[in-house]
Amino acid sequence: MAFQLKNTELALSTINKAIELQPSSLQWQLQKVNTLLLMLDKSAANDLALNLKNKQAANLAQCNDLAVMFNQLNDFEQAQYYYQQAVGFINEKKQPVESAQLYFNLASLARYQGNISLAETHLDHALSLNPHDYEAYWLRSSLKKQSQNNNHIDQLQQILKQGVKHPISKAQIHYALAKELEDIGKYSQCFEQLNFGAKSRRDCMRYQVEHDISTLKQITTTFTKEFFQQYQASNLTLKASNKAAPLENNEPIFILGLPRTGSTLVERIISNHQEVFNAGELNNFALCMMEAVKNVTKTPPQTRNELVELTSQIDFQALGKHYINSTRPETGHTRHFIDKLPLNSLYVGLIHLALPKAKIIHVTRHPLDTCFSIYKQLFTNGYPFSYQLTELAQYYIAHHNMMQHWLKVLANIIHQVAYEDVVDDLSKEAKKLIAYCDLDWQEQCIDFQNNSAPSTTASASQVREKVYRSSTGKWRQFEKELQPIKQLLVQAGIACD
Image 1: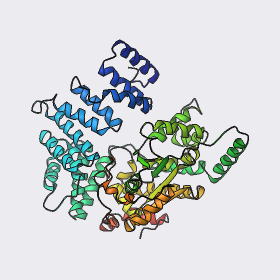
Image 2: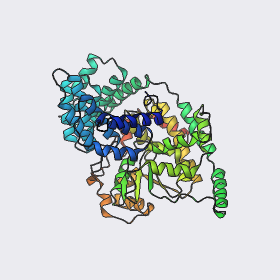
Image 3: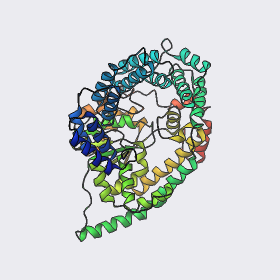
Image 4: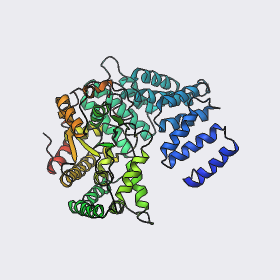
């Protein structure tokens, strides 16, 4: 009960007593790991989880719980081990839906690890057990580029013809069909399916893009050039009086910007360096920021704009230390680590204040290529602005203005790289990236397709391919359909040619 209510101190105390009574109980050990994860103490959670590796689970539920836990810890091999163990606890004929879910989970893990063929095999099996697993159709379509002679278009069209009741499921089939139609060059039909899918997804959401735009503007009006100058001056005064010292940690490399801009490509280049660890898309900075706000006020902020104002009052050095500690034990064993959460672009100012020696890389892409790539992606969570063309354009403009603000007030701090420049001259841009990170050049950085590190992003199926130029200028195939976006961007002064 305490765990469900997120009373972490009581939950930890209670589970420790249970372990004292039954120290060999796998169930209690598992519960303690989950409690530690809820407390953001990933280091302690990881240490305890080491004792649970390769243990024999008692039942299907325990297998699932262990698999989910190891997945949270990014130990995909152990997660796979427990899902495979779960298969032995289930009768496919009597429990087809539950079995299908297991194979879907195994497919997701195979995809993370770059085994696309195995992922496809698992998904085919999942769908043979449960033809109504619409997410499986969507994931299968995204695994690889479909061909004229080898695709699932007829099957997906038949599913839509038969009717799909749940709007999210319906969206998944529309997006899957759009992906495969684009693969074979049927662009107008592709965009039609995207519109159907986006509308089905958007109709399920309570969202107002004006709120996001207001928040982005509030960030720029709160963290002004004068704010940074005043903070720097006060910091120098404190340092002169030996009362404070800035955090010297230079481990993090933040790769950020809008999603679908090519940040995964940049990540793979840098993480192929021997002195860099790829920590993935971490939510840690935002979570640590929220914890820091609690120390500023006893009254929770009522709006996001109020939250932004409160973040200007937090202890930045404490925030930096908390963030670094929260990334352990995955980080700390290499000179640098990468945090590639796109939404960290909202916190650029805070990142620099909390970790003045951190590297910040902003990845850009042609505005219309960016918008189209976002529009055609069905995100599992987040990015609610991506399902309506006008809202997408409005958010893009607000985000663009915010990033221009960061580049102005934090001059020479942020390294900006364009996706098109990387694919046009990989060696040149890769060397610039490595130099910016204060690292010596290593030739394997341009052989990133051999990087075996798992990837959980929307680009997980593409990260092990060599650089290709087919994604640049893709928007021109949809120029007519993207006119509503282009018109708004041009009016805002953003070049789109």
